[in-house]
Amino acid sequence: MYQMRNSSRQKRPFLRVLIPIVFLAVGIGGYEAWQNSNTKHTKTTEIEAKYISFSGNYIFSIPSGRSVDGVSIPSVALVYAGDSVQAKNFEELYAAGVVAVQPITALKDDNPKTFKDYVNNTLAADLRKALNSATDVREVKKENPEAFKVFASTNEGKRLRAIYALNLPQPVMMAAKDETDTLKIVGSTMEDLKKSKLKADIDQAALSTKSLVEMMQKLDSSGIMREGSSEFSKSVSQDKLATDLKSSSSYLSRSITIVGGSYNGKDFIAQLIFEPKTKDENPVSGVISMRKSGKAWKLQAIQLPTP
Image (cartoon, rainbow, N blue to C red; front, side):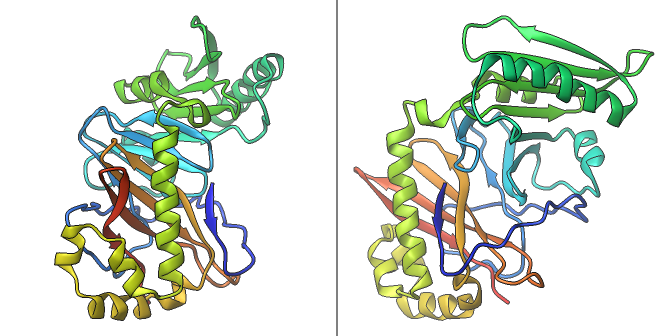
C-alpha cells in the first residue's frame, strides 16, 4: 500500500449502509477539480485493463463494460455495470449484479490446511446462518492457486449467493448473487500482485502518483505542472491549479492513501482516500490519472474534494 501521512491515521468505519451510492465517471482527457462527491470509481471498456488493490495485494482483469470502485467500502472493491449504482445495503448491491472483492483478513498466509478449514468451517457456516440456506462447497480443480466455490441456495434450489475463495499469499474472496460472467472473469484472472509480470510498471506508476500527492499536500503547483502531460498543461494554468489546491487544502492536510486503481499499460487511474483526522470527519476520495510517456508517467487529470 502506498500511503502519505500528515497526521495519525484514524480507523475508517465500515460503510454497511450506502444511501445512495452514486459513482461518477472518471475522465482521463483533461484537468478536473472534483467539487462535491465522496465516492469515485475507475471505469474501463477493455477486458485487458486491470484493477489493482494495493491494500489487498491482488490484481484482476476488469470485465468489458464494468467499472470498479475501491473506495466506497473500506478494503472492498465493487465491480458493477453502467455509470451508477444505488443501494441501501449489500443485498441491493448483489441484486444489482455487483461483485464484491475483498481480502480474507482472518487468514494471514496461504497455508492450505488453514484455508480449507476456513472455507468449510467458517465461510460456509457463516453463509448458511446469515442466509438461512443450504451451502455447497466445491473445490476448483486447478493447479495454482487453490480455490473453492461456495454456493448458498434455498431448499427449492434458488441461488442466493456465489462466492469464490482463492488461496493467494493474502487469501481473497469474491461474492455475487449468482455465478455470473463478471464473477467468472474476476475469479479466473485474479492473481497475487507481488508475482504479477506487470508489477514493476505498476510500481513505477504508483510511485509517480505518490510523488504528485506529496506535491499536492505541499500546494506545490509549479512542481505539479512540471510533472503534467502536454494535455494537462494545455487544460489548466498554474494560477488555476494553485487556486484549486488551496480550495482543497483542508483535505490535502489529511493522511492520503492510494488504495488502488486501474491500469492498462498506458493509463493508470489511481483512487485516493483522504483519511479523517477526527471522529467527526468522514473519509472522502479523489482520483489522479496518469499517462505513460516514453518510460515516464505523467499527470493527466486530477479530481479533488473541496469543502
